[in-house]
Image 1 (cartoon, rainbow, N blue to C red):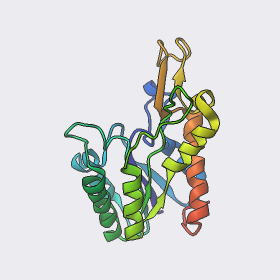
Image 2 (cartoon, rainbow, N blue to C red):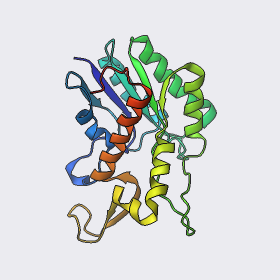
Image 3 (cartoon, rainbow, N blue to C red):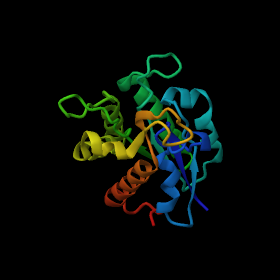
Image 4 (tube, helix red, strand yellow):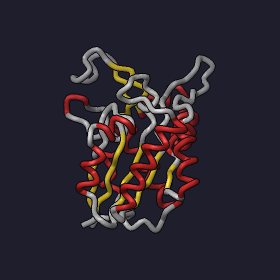
Length: 222
């Protein structure tokens, strides 16, 4: 049985019971793919390309990787964080880390697939949505175009979705809870980065739809 590996940050990662209803989109990925394939979600909260590589998580993926597998790579949320453990410059170290991952995957006769980070829900008082990921999505897309890597622009897709849903409607996709609404967040929470269960399902279904549109020959697609 071949495997689809999911590498990334908290927006994709599996969640423990004590943080639910926060949900990573990767938790629903296996619902959309061929039953003869398995999913290995190695995404972790708070990771950038730098910390993911330096902590050895990517090495874990390589150790398990077999010919014919696919590796989804989605970073950009934390690479801009101004700390030495995570920060990368978009047009140098970020691109270099992505290229390193891709070439390592290809050397194992597997296929890398890149995804730009999903948009944050950050609206200005005038109702316009803010682009919060700077140059990182553009840097990823540019690298993929130059080297012929598969790439899905989830930043563009989710940004358009949030614009369409608007300031209030888009809360339905994120971790927004009132005080007393959930035992894990007794004081409530307003989180515009992390998805709830509905948001994770929506994002995952969008990823699958774009894959079928752009890469319909991928063998894991149901």
